[in-house]
Length: 70
Picture 1 (cartoon, rainbow, N blue to C red):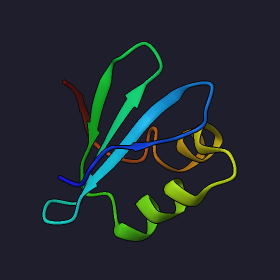
Picture 2: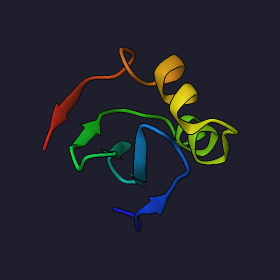
Picture 3: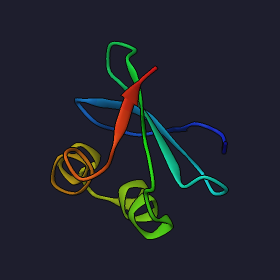
């Protein structure tokens, strides 16, 4: 798993991605952490560089990938 990357968002706190398993971890404001499975590298990179991390997450990740809360 890569190092956490802090993001500027009203809903997300930090993100990181595992290249070997294509697993995205998202830490939300408030501390809850979720893993999203089978997230392509391009989607993670687009999230990482998005102007609005929260908006990108809502439109392109939430509801599109299997997930678990840690």
